[in-house]
Length: 164
Image (cartoon, one colour):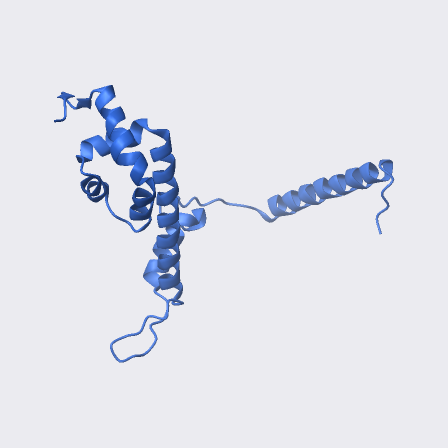
């Protein structure tokens, strides 16, 4: 019988659940999470409620570590599948047996998530730049690069390193 006060499980009951249901099944929990099973399915496998599983997940460091590691692996595998489909390297075939090429729409959505240059949130800002501004900026960059180079050469010479 589970004793709960509101939505909180008594500490000793949670401890019993962790010791008898979770720790002996850590490997199974890890494997279930890697396969993408939802928390409710994991809880059902353990014979506990979803709430009890989530509370144990929140309070038990060994469970949290195993769960988070498995989630990272799952996310990585899913990311690889999505990127392969976006690039058309997943060997997917159409109904006639012909290879399906890259998915441009999916590729754009992936780029929007991983590359800031493709982010939809990026606001377009128009900047008026004169030729003089560009020349001044290039000269400034060149001056800084020369200073860095000279500083690096001087530092290496002090260390006894010769530039070839």
